[in-house]
Length: 325
Ligand code: SIN
Image (cartoon, rainbow, N blue to C red):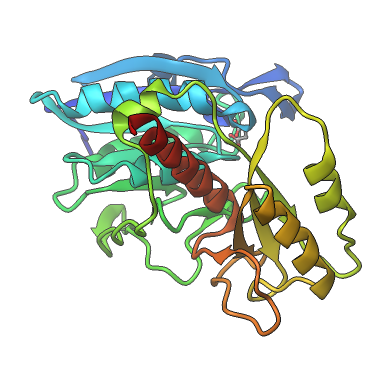
């Protein structure tokens, strides 16, 4: 089967295990992420993909993802999307924080052309490397007639950016969309489109120019509530002397976003000193719901990792509005 693709596709590399190389050939599990550039990954994809253009935005382990690389990625994406000869953009990324980057790109959508992200759980020189198949799948999905929005391709499935979560360290079952529909699934070797992207939740985001001009990612921390947890961690966060002011707090509550009564006082203090508090759930799936006796914080229909990105974006938007006054 030839998957020759004629329209141009821009492949933006950011690193990750998909671009990783083993430290010693005898041990496939110890490797360094982001060693290869995006163009090196295609060598391992046997099909002839003429019309591909490669750009290395970064070569990092995605645990180190943050504002400067997100800014470079967004700039490169905007530029590629504005070109008439480009059909769409593929982004290679580490699995660990791909859901945050996918959410960020989704938040700045709707993109006129599809954005397909992909990743791998095994390094590029692993005897059972999954990157080449995932990359080939990402490239072929991009040219599906119904492809749109931002999605993440992994192991024969395409997840919408809004729903994808890394839920496991199992190399073949790393991602899920929970109760939400997949974007597409490979059935008998062909992509079958399943659902269009859900509209972006109406959360505040900065303008693209505001985001690209930002010099600091607002400091947002994430605290998980659990049986036996005290309020001391929160008190420590609020009282700590740090050169970066705490601006947001995402609480991953138990169940439907619950936390013990003692946290109400600490959260009230946080809000009084200007910290934005959002309530999510530590459950893998489902949203935080209103609770009796829980008055502090604003519920958000996002899992904590995405809520942290969304809250930081909303703080950047507030900064932009203030500086425009
Ligand atoms: C990373 O996220 O960069 C490392 C882990 C991975 O890609 O699987």
